[in-house]
Amino acid sequence: MALTLPVERRGWIVAALGVAQTIGWASSYYIPAVLAAPMAASFGLSPVWVFGAFSSAMVVSATIGPWAGARIDRIGGRGVLILSNLVFALGLGLLSLAASPGMLFLGWAILGLGMGMGLYEAAFATLAGIYGKEARGPITGITLIAGFASTVGWPLSGLMLATWGWREACLGWALIHLGLALPLNALLPKGTERIVPTVAETADGPPPSRRALWLLAFVFAVTWFNSTAMAAHLPGLLQAAGASGAMAIAAGALIGPAQVAARVLEFGLLRRFHPLISARLAASAHPLAAVCLVGFGGPAAYAFALLHGAGNGILTIAKGTLPLALFGAAGYGARLGWLNAPARVLQAAAPLIFGAALAAWGLQAIWLTAGIGVLATLALLAIRRG
Image (cartoon, rainbow, N blue to C red; front, side, top):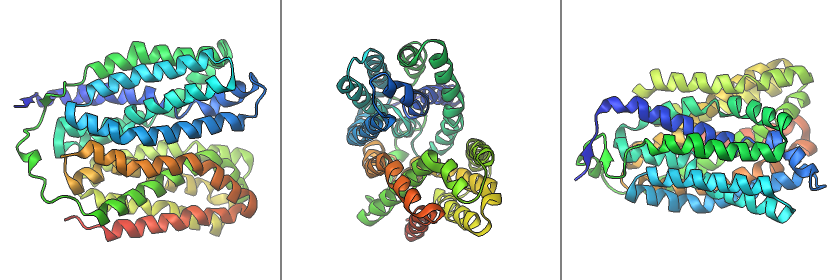
């Protein structure tokens, strides 16, 4: 029989998991922006090779995600997340010792394993195992904290790079995993502990329809593609619209605060509504931002960044809350892994695909992401709460 934990522990659990997630994202997803160029230069390679290794890590994470989710369903998330910290540290350690491009790719592949078992999907599944269908608030809470991963990660990576070098920066992140993230994940409840009673969690209704699952997988794939494409090419896109370089950088800096502000809104006002409502509004934000940018040009750069960032912030939460609200907590981890596997693959290809479109079409490339964003909104409209 599951052990019921005091609700007062919620704040500690969310804080510990949120900080551990911040470290996980900062030391994997966000390090190429700072370390790719010096990493490649040390081997006499173009940075494209490092970004290619990063893309391969995303594919690896897609393959391991369903296994990690199913494992969390069975035994809880603490052990899987602790293992992810060890894998992250191993991958980062191999990068710091890489003597050849082959070892560099191996290090990134191991980082991909860590990403598949230690980032948002695993954290969401862990919270679903602890709180059941009441996990929406805690999921929002950890995304509020981890939303600052780039804010913390980029300067810290840059500081370690400037002080010691890229190899030492990788080693530094490995030590942070072992010295901080791992102990924080170790504070999580055991797999046999839950904060909500388990009886209600077994009454989740009929199994999810195949149609709803495919629609949701499509929505996640589109939103990850658009998010990654904008993260890689936003300054170039805004300059193609007529913004100056300084304006493009300033507008890009607004995306992080917009994401956090939108998550605060979701935590406060929008949590009164079904997650489908907030997801539909969020999915329509990027197409609306594209219309503003094409219609008004460079002066709309700030509006584009705010709208895109706000939509992306809420959609990140929806990736965890929507499957929980639609299909229940039973089998949540494995289901979330499968739903996000196509998204990880498309995410790996997004910088290359959108970069080619931007080079060929200029500003009109935005209709690629806006068009599939409209399709994602329509897909969410086609999903029913029941």
